[in-house]
Image (cartoon, rainbow, N blue to C red):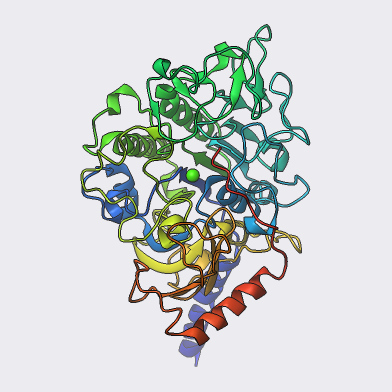
Length: 507
Ligand code: CA
């Protein structure tokens, strides 16, 4: 009898310890490394053979590689909006690609991914690309305190570029101030009429070190003309060749300052978005032209961050996620020979489309979860989205999301940790403008585009991704009942609200 009691007690004790361990919130450091326009097929661990990405591959080998992970949208601003808010961006007007002088589009009253983690005791930081607007109505005061911005929505520290690398103003902002600004040379920015008397790409193409293919005809900064017009702030302007070094150093500084408390870092890299201007040591290193070279540069950034974590003995207690804000694009407005020098490389791998498209290549992105000792290496086909970070990390850190906040974020933590291969059942995909698609498992329905663009079908599209990952065989006519069902489910997803539509805004 005694022996049986002993056995049961041992079993109960073991179970209790297990239960206690499972229930207690865990607070690993969380580092999200978010590339800009990196495609599903752009890295070695996702099948690239022409571009060498040893650091990302190392992360892939030690981590869990997702094959069906998605950005919410196929362009930057809406995708990043969703990542931070847990809300599908197409529910809210004004979340399309923003000009560089737009006001902040995230309401500081709402819970965000960084505010949730801050409440959980994390020190929160963002380094790199922002592109979510700054300042109140009317936009930012570049020469004064620039707020609201990252610090007002939950970040303790921010070192950012305001928008994209191809939009003015081409300056860094640390917390509330432009870095290195000379008050005697104030910054003015315009996205309407030209401002100042500096040459533009339109009027002085002979001054450009990088030619144009579409748009980007505004002020020439550092030999490259941008979208929009800018004057002043000469001492504060970035050098494109230095950006990877500057941003990586700031990210590593942030990590080094927070070794004795949990921290959350979003490292929002600028590569491989245009203009593609690698540091000289990466020029010609990929064999696939300048777009390949800036992917090699991005891989170097990843390696530096992983090394910093290792040197500080933080690797085993740090959850690293590497992903991208949307799919790949080749010619994105500069004549940088991205198409001509491709050398057989396939940026989207086997997927159709890329940036700006609702096909899988637009939103299905590389996605690696690494947490040595906690997440077993492997491959997962669980359906997950960047919009799920809020609910998943709230679950990880024992936080409750206030009612009504992060409404589209699903807790997929068990999938992220590799405990299950089941993620979401359903997902809305978005081209970043106005077209939505609905995923139910491996079936995908794309709504008809009312103003069809090249490559889109007018009457809706239906694909069986289990047989047709490349979305080549439209089954909409052959299976009208299934299309109707999925279309109805998409409509019901839209019920909590859909914005009136994003206009095309490449400028
Ligand atoms: Ca992007």
